[in-house]
Amino acid sequence: MGITRKLATKLISYQSSIRHQHKKVIMSRRLHARRTDGVDKNIWVEFTQLAADYKAVNLGQGFPDFSPPKFLQDAFCEAVSGGPQMHQYTRAFGHPPLVKNLAKFFSRIVGHEIDPLEDVLVTVGAYQALFCAFQALIDEGDEVIIVEPFFDCYQPMVKMVGGKAVYVPLRPKVEGSTVLSSGDWVLSAEELASKFTPRTKAIVINTPNNPLGKVYKTEELQMIADLCIKHDALCISDEVYEWLTYDGNKHVKIASLPGMWERTITIGSAGKTFSATGWKIGWTISSEQNIKRLKAMHQMSVFDCATTVQEAIARGFEREYELFGTPESYFQQLPALLHQKRNKLASCLESVGLQPIMPEGGYFLIADISSVKVDFNDSMSAGDEPYDFRFVKWLTKEKGLATIPVSAFYSPEHRQEFDKYIRFCFIKEDSTLDAAEDILRKLSQRQ
Ligand code: IK2
Image (tube, rainbow, N blue to C red; front, side, top):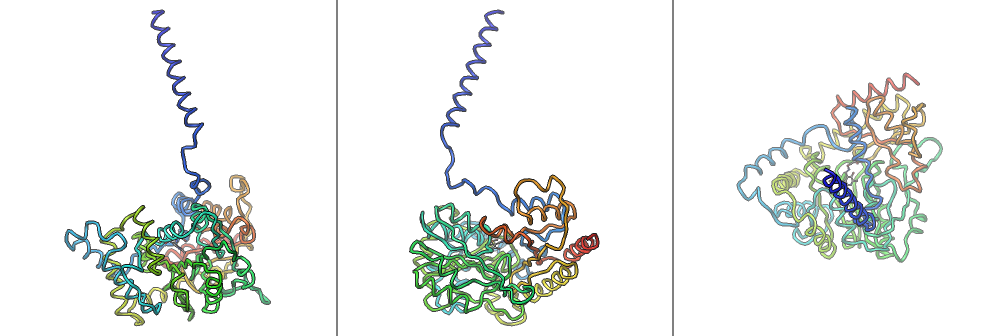
């Protein structure tokens, strides 16, 4: 008995010393890559979960709560029953019918003959297009100018390749009274010019802009183009909301300006174009020498995208090519629908004292929350979280309305200046917008 106990004690101490040594090995080596440091937090993960947890009326993340158009759903069903090849791998850089139709469609718009096989790359949403662009074109030490407010992933994607993000904000030009339109938010030509250095590799722009809804005018794009040409820099142009413009504002592609085709990487999204964000298909269009580099990244990560979905989107573009500029075109119908929804939400916000900034494009609207006085309870005033983050959490948890804090679209340097705005997504059924309106009215009555 004595011997058994002794043996057992020895065994336990041996096991514990092995565990200790194993732990020491783990602790003494860094078993992860540095590029993942500091990029773990993500507003979409956090706030989408919060909206779901509290079953809130969701005007947060940017997706429609209605189905894509019937012609697209039909195209998808036809693709699914279109034979065995529809269920197998397709060409790595884009399903042939899709790249052909994208090239045909956008050649007409850019005014440049786009080669479907050399100048187009199909990706897993615009998100992967952005990832490939930064990975393929930015080196360690390169500077990348990012216009604020910006879609939040640009900054961590630049960081991951060892690049340095340099920020330049769109600022409201306050002439006289209040700023009412996203068009009043402008870049200072001098400030932008001062950001270009010999290390500048690229500038990232987003038009129509998320979250502000600004649609860049030709003169503004020309000013950016002139600087890119002068400093031999690239322009990564995120145009996922290109069809969604209002009040006569027109989307202009910077790639169509003289001297910009070779140095612009234009990024688009089928999810945003056809109200099918879950399909996760995007693309980049650029000159062959740029796309060749992006293709290398794509083939080393994703390789190719889902065949059936690409086939359906190809048919969607084929239809839009035929109907372009007519009232039957989805690219006319969707902005017409969203125009009404934008106005509905804006007038509700205005009537409850949340000053909206009227977006010229996209499907988001930002509003000033300064007039709402909130006494956050202790659990919501934790740490040094920006005011708008605390406000959005309070609105979701206590009032059942999910939105997105606007300071998340700014660099840490400028976040404080813009934490009095929150973002509402208006590509929602009218019943969802009505439910949001009820909540906002009750909120204004308690003030
Ligand atoms: N670029 C911009 C400017 C986007 O807005 C998005 C999608 N954003 O949706 C989240 C939100 O803002 O609520 C993307 C790129 C990514 O597009 P895709 O869905 O095609 O990957």
